[in-house]
Image (cartoon, rainbow, N blue to C red; front, side, top):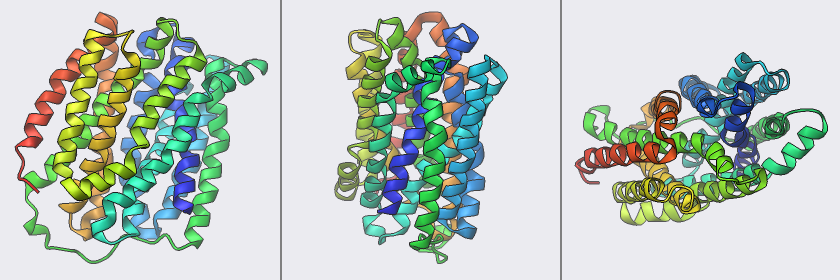
Length: 378
């Protein structure tokens, strides 16, 4: 229960980088091409911090490691607030520290898996990720009210969620320390099977699933806030529709966990890939009119692939190597997303807006699906 509360509160803080970050970047730099920058920096920060975070959790316990992640993220939010208030582009790099908070929230699913028998791990992860829905939906929905409040104090409207993150992340850290008293422990010390029995290809396949889904989702979401504003959505409306997307990302998690237990992680991952391709097709053919459908399909596809890929990774990794595999998984997700937001999304948006970006991700997801679909069956 304490872990679920921590997940819910921490996810409110993450809304700052994911939703308000692109709007703030355009406001400070004067160009929509820089919109994906804060989100890209956030995922780079998440990727760089993941190995350190998982290593420390292996040594001192999950709860303490998660708490540190959230306190660091609060410092990042403070830096971004200063950068936005003074219109200093370099201080937007505080989003790197916000990425550490993303690491903490996303690693919560592994903490949930530690607390139950192996056969119930997928369902436990689903419950932990569903808890994120509370804050992840509330965060975007607060974009308008928080922006109004920020403007009352002479700050840019896009800074409202970052100020909120200054409160939410320290609160999450305190809750994490309370969880430590409840006995959130270290990773298991014994291996379920010898390392040599796990094939190299079996380890790569779930990482490919995690990389492809995060590359697609984060890159497109980095473009969506400004895309919606340019199609005459106001802040409250944009926050609401993004909140619906986030609800689709996390809300179905308990059901996804049950599907993994019933159908297997490979089939669930394939279903997620189909939904991602469908979402990108909507972006190519119906950009503007079909934005809500695009965002819902994108969120559902990401949910299936995230939990399917995570369950897959846990299953093919000996327990004694879990902390390393978790770190590698988060690095792969982070670097894939960073590549999309910092290298791919900006140029494609400059060339042809959202439809061109979505067309590129149709091709990428078809190729990735063909690659991991040929892996050995569960």
